[in-house]
Amino acid sequence: MTTAERPLEVMSPGQMSCPGCGLALGMRQVMRAMGKRCVVVVVPSCVAVTTGPYPNYTLGVPAFHSAFEIAAPTAAGIRNALIEQGQDDVPVLAFAGDGGTFDIGLQSLSGAADRNEDILYVCMDNEGYMNTGIQVSSATPQFTWTGTTPTGNTRRKKQIMEIMAAHRMPYAATASIAFPEDLNRKINKARQIRGTRFFHILSPCTTGWRIREDMAVKVAMLSVETRVFPLYEIEDGLHYTINHQPRGLPVERYLEVQGRYRHLKPEQTAVIQTEVDRNWQELTARAARSGIDQS
Image (tube, rainbow, N blue to C red; front, side, top):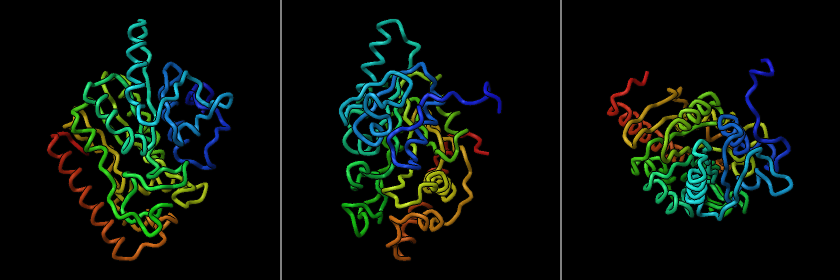
């Protein structure tokens, strides 16, 4: 690959996340696709740790650190201010974690989506409140170990993509650090759309998921190939497109490499497999109803 062919690096090396952090890899891929002409909003979370406080800031674009629960309306305010200044070609991107999206920020995100604010919102989902001690969130899957669910989470993971689709917003998509071409294509597609665009990126956490520092991409790949985290797009809240046909590996392949599932009993694994199968069937049914060729 020549120098001219290499992706534009917007995120500097030496950032402050844990070694092998899947969230940092995802942010890097998103920023490569966005380029240097944009504004970023971050909130208190692993996202803020990764971008770093001054003078260790790692993103090569202007950024605004907002309160935890208002990533979406903050991005909307900045975007509208840019439009008033005649800079309507500058996109505004909000990064938040699952805590700031599924839980604390859900109301303000819903309001922004309802108003169809012209922003890109990226949820970096590491399935827990990781930088404050690995506490459970509503993004934490059932039976998962966390610091506050030492015997396993009793609740099922909130279906955030279904919630966002219900807003009938222009575009929503899942993406994975293990499939960078798909992620890059989706970001570039979203940049051509006006209105609220939502991304859900599963972000393996080496610390909270109890995996080795070199395992984040492999675990992300297994989440897709076991159908735990399928890759798809939703347009106008109605039209579903599956972007990758998973191999359909047994869910054990995904669970067995993570220490947070070491306590699972066979009957719990079977429950997880049933849930994954049901979610996949529902997704494929929605895609079929969309009338789009999924081949």
